[in-house]
Image (cartoon, rainbow, N blue to C red; front, side):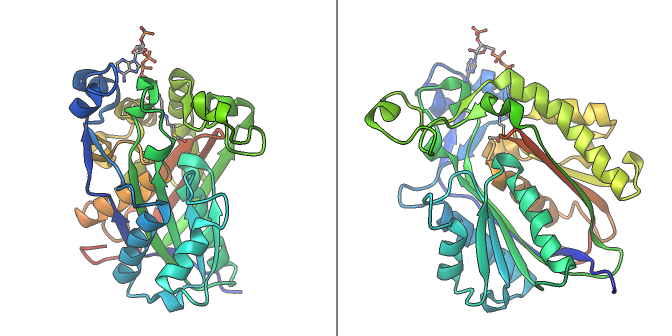
Length: 335
Ligand code: ACO
């Protein structure tokens, strides 16, 4: 059977308009612009309107990716939404997107792998195409993390922002597109990054609300160490699987959590800064949306050209990690 190669045929992203600056945050918690910039690289983040839920951001990004791919919603076979902040426990956010964009024949499901979610979802979507099951898959990473923040906790609330990014996956030319991936998990250390209540372990109650257990709790130092150790390792593993070396890598799009995490990981990889994309200064950590938003901006800035070997790499709660190595399959300047 002929091998089916899978590439990105369209890409798009959406950021809510409202900007929350570090100076504004400094009026809410005991922090400062200097501290946040020095320790994280973040200058501002976007915050969704009260009327906007995750599906609303996902739809905007999804439609932009479909337009970029010149694919209609009716042609989509499958929609996967990666998110840790779904509209509801159920129905899935993917089903809401499916209905609202009128993707009449699409199957739809959500994936929750926190910040690694989009890369996991892209690998999953690609498998549906390479196995011959589906032809066109819409993969979206979308988050409204502002709704699961404790806005009195300076350890976490300065880090995150809202946004969405999406890609359309389709068969591409031979030897282009996704070459390999590396997915992994370490559930043993899951408690270092957790939203403790609201699930079946600790259902919502007046106490859980009072104790702010529906918001992100994090051991920042433990996550930092895990991230630096994992990002490089996972990238190398995926490159290995593709038969490539770090010298062959033209461009890397990392999860946008913290400039220091990215810099330390890239130093370990011996990868020069020019080959690594960052935009977390503008948006903070948008969790599963961060990689597709960064990839979209990198593509639109003309940073990636046809034939480039690129890597997408993410880490997050779980703990979890994910990398994809691909040979960029598109040649036009806007994607
Ligand atoms: N403003 C001012 N001071 C602060 C702030 C703040 N916003 N936050 C923490 N501090 C204080 C701490 O209380 C501490 O004070 P103390 O020494 O009196 O106790 C001091 O600053 C130093 O704190 P550290 O934790 O040592 O700071 P560090 O340099 O480790 O930076 C940070 C903290 C930014 C959270 C870092 O550890 C980090 O980025 N970790 C990774 C977080 C991450 O990426 N999470 C997302 C994972 S993806 C997902 O799935 C959701």
